[in-house]
Image (spheres, rainbow, N blue to C red):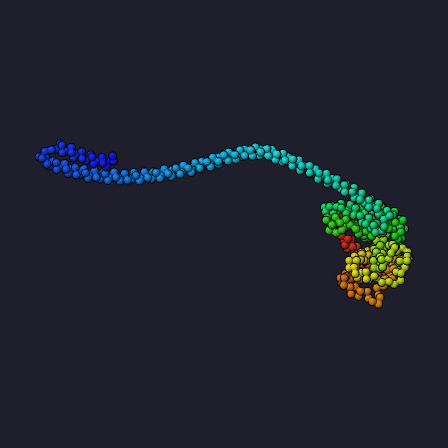
Length: 458
């Protein structure tokens, strides 16, 4: 039974009860009042019923909403269950990660110990390296000195071997010069005047004591003789005087050669004694030997040039020999011309010969200025000089035109070669020198570009 039906029954019971209490007609006024009151009450009851109906509607609406909420709650519960499942997986992963982190922490503790050990090891290694560097600084000069000496001795033993031809001896002589310790110094040592003074002195001192016995055997003869082993050794030593160790250029801009040391020592005789370095005085002690080596060098280079510009290079059985009037060289005692065909087809040979001719001319000028006598030309082997003087550079067909017509030799290279060979012939004839062309002694010394040296005498 609903609330609305209950209220209707209540109303009917109230009316019936009221009529039972007031059955008499005499009481009409009272009954009328009661009817009015009942009417009022009915009105109130209608209002209450209306309000109850609204409440009932609201309750039903809320019930529907609660059903919706319950459905949503059910969906939310499913989602929560899903999230809970995922959270469980995440929780498991987190536990695994924590396990890994604990394991890593354990490893890190171990790594810390390893790093500490490595740090201590590095400190030890650094200390050992410093010790090694100190030891090397102490013993490197001795080690380098030892190997340089061994290398020189080996090259010298090959150089004096009678079975080796002059061409091979030139290579042996170059290695011999490479092996002097002053060719192997560091950049710091090249900038140390005391170190350089010691090195130059020791080099020249050993050098002259090694070559002097051979120079005495030569007895001042300059003739090139391929049959004489001692003479060939000296010519190889003279010809290779300009050689230097290629590694030297990594530490010093200008190459330092034995030729420069000899020239410097010879030029220094014009200086006061207190201005001379120890190695300069050592060179002057062996003055005649130093001059003889430079003259040999000039003769040998000139001989190489004559061999290349004539046809002797192509003669079968020819041996490098300008000491006698052999059948091969006999024709050079008459006027002869250069082998232009060979030269004009070989620009590399022309450039190389120009370099050798420059060396010969430069050395001949040095010897003339050192002598300082305008009437005395630097000495040259007689037979070699005669052949050079017979070179015909004034033939009916100017030799310059041969090179000008060449399509292989660059014009500037040809012109340099022509000027150089003409100057060499003139110098051998002794007609190309004037004392005013000789540089001042100090200028000549500076031009050699040797490192600074102490003037302390040993």
